[in-house]
Length: 350
Image (tube, rainbow, N blue to C red; front, side, top):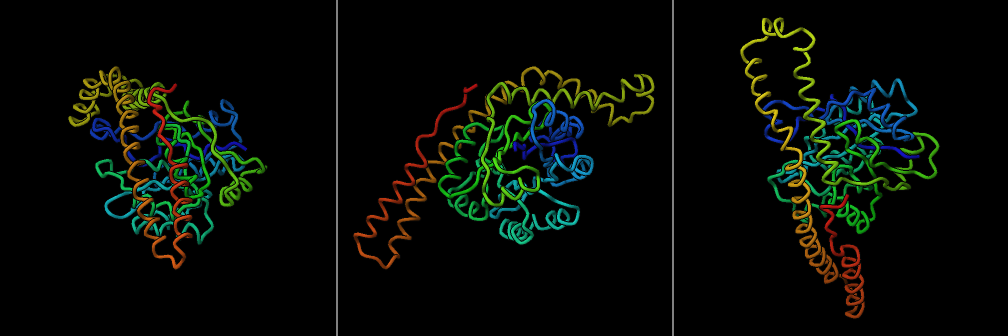
């Protein structure tokens, strides 16, 4: 079975993270659930998909009731990870009761949050490891080492990431984590670019069990500058359609009679910024992927140094002969260097 485990619709709670998006309230996605279903099942030919909006499950619940054999109720929770950091954790096979509990627990820390997921036997995984939800905070290797200890699966093919996917695969290999794939689609045509595969599962129930058993692997591919540019363009286009739809439906004269001054100024501001549709997607796409490569390259180097120091400390505390410690040290450093080989520059890979 092929299942996209990471998609969004217009219910998603978070707004676009660019400052213009925050200023004008650009949604995280404008995709309708029915369009997501058609794209996943008929255009991409998947066996199923999960709707994983940020901190809400309304659309997922509604669509799952209509198509229980194809739609997974999921959620991408923003979880407090300590030290001012926040992470995105995707939980699957949810209901209203579980979601209510998780939405409260996400503020109490990653350990408490994942403990509940394990206790309730809920499939879950860590999404896009290479970035914190708080972009101004630099990721630290000791935090990654701590965070991954709470997971048995990690997203290694995200449809909006490039070198971060490669880094995530190395994390999965070193820590023995299962690998998941998901498009992270914020616009409908991106759904199905990445997915998770189970070779044995015959239905979604078996598929969800295979996630917990780590009998899955990631498929599809990550982002490139062109796809990322298309994603931003689609969100901008859908934003203008959504914002100006009332004018087209009511007519300009009727709209002007009903709109307040604040709304009028907002519309004029949006028209002024329409030029961003031309230059923003290409520039932000290039900046984003370049930034990913630079940040992840440095993070990987720091993680290698940290792991060597940490494992050396562990070995020195062992009550074993010197020869045994040396052999273990060589084995451990070999594993580190074999796993974290040179990061490939995929900035311009298409």
